[in-house]
Length: 208
Ligand code: GRF
Image (cartoon, rainbow, N blue to C red):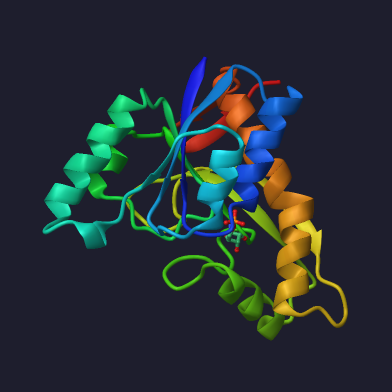
């Protein structure tokens, strides 16, 4: 059984997709051990509560130093017996010590086809605003392992989504969530939980 701790910052629709997939049995061998949010009022915490999952508010703002925050975060992850960290709409920088401790055991869902429209400053609606500004006809989502960089770790899955005439950033975001994010994230978690995903020389290998 893979203990998964989900990091959130906002509405939690990706968290909900994971909760629903575990409940439906399309994700197996997984237990969501807890949800950690750096925003006290994140609706994602409400979703966790409704699902009977422990929700924890933990923000660097509440600590005197980065070290103190990092120490508490690592303690909390251990208390939850975390095997895999899932960043689901998480806007918090993950401390390097956590990335080191959970090497290739942290995944993130990003709302574009990396390496397009990613890196510092590319999050949430900003990603879709830039895609529309550039005029791309296809965008999508990427789920990847997290390393020291921003959106730079080994890519696990990607899924393309069509950009439609007249799209707004909001309509495009919704389609990317529905057609890509909410599918890829549970699929990646299930793959990891069932030993189907390995990282070999920085490249992800998926076995069916
Ligand atoms: C959305 O922009 C989504 O594309 C990205 O994070 C934001 C919030 O997602 N992954 P969520 O609804 O909080 O999961």
